[in-house]
Amino acid sequence: MHRIGTSERPDLPLATVIGAGALGMAIARRLALSHRVLLADIDGQRAQDCAELMRGEGCDASGIVCDITSPDAVAALAGEVAARGGLGALAHVAGLSPSAGNFRSIIRVNLMGAALVAEALRPLACPGSAAVLVSSLAAHHFQPAPEVASLLHDPAAPDIAERLAAAMGEDATPQLAYPVSKWGMNLYCRRQAAAWGEMGARIVSISPGMIATPMGALEFEKSPAKRQLYEKTPLRRECTMLEIADVVEFLASPRASFISGTDLLVDGGLAAALSDA
Ligand SMILES: NC(=O)c1ccc[n+]([C@@H]2O[C@H](COP(=O)([O-])OP(=O)(O)OC[C@H]3O[C@@H](n4cnc5c(N)ncnc54)[C@H](O)[C@@H]3O)[C@@H](O)[C@H]2O)c1
Figure 1: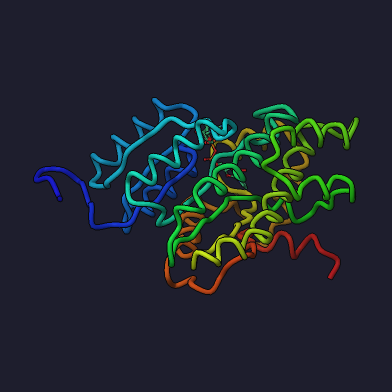
Figure 2: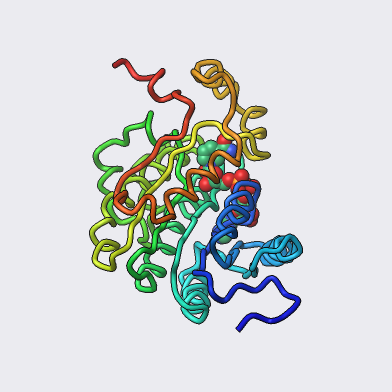
């Protein structure tokens, strides 16, 4: 029942957005045009403040604390999604850049956390539900060694970060944790399409190139290699958050109803420019 004087839209399906950071909010605002939004973040205060801001703009939004690396916290999130009517859409955005963590924390948040969330929410999917996981172009110009790739077949393993660190030895750096985590995320989406398909639901990853966000700006400061890549981007600019929100909105919508188990590059042509083909 709609309550007079509120932005509540009980008639709309629920979109769960993981990560109330810069990009997470751009995506949440866009999905709020056609969904109720549940924002989840390890910073519960931020999630609640962002949801309040969105309600003030006319969105049906609420915020909840969830550390996606904690199976108990993710189970509690799933309970909340179930109580709110199940999964319409999942936009998984939370992630750590190489400058924001160490090898283990980046693997846990970007890969294990994403897999834990998708596993917990899949049983709440219904025909038409879609999960969109924000990956990165970094997954596309990286190839893990076979022993690392085989570990990535089990991304929700509680000790995945330790196993990868042991397999990678001196290469277990934050700079390599990032492409490993995103390569693993894209693999996960491909491998999960059958399970989501059994529910009549879809799962896809998107791999953005450089997006103009505070996270992206920090990486420009810390990594000279990023500027060299920027110069090679055929469109000669960063992607805006609005352009990523457009893609997530499309992939979560019925217009993308036959797209599953794949990855969509949104990189201004950079992967093509870097390839030999
Ligand atoms: N900026 C770029 O150039 C670029 C390019 C490609 C992909 N991406 C991807 O975009 C995504 C994030 O973008 P953003 O701008 O919103 O980043 P951000 O740093 O603004 O926000 C990340 C959010 O994730 C939350 N978070 C961190 N650890 C968490 C945990 N354990 N549990 C729950 N929440 C947690 C943080 O509190 C924060 O609110 C990442 O997945 C990143 O890899 C960014």
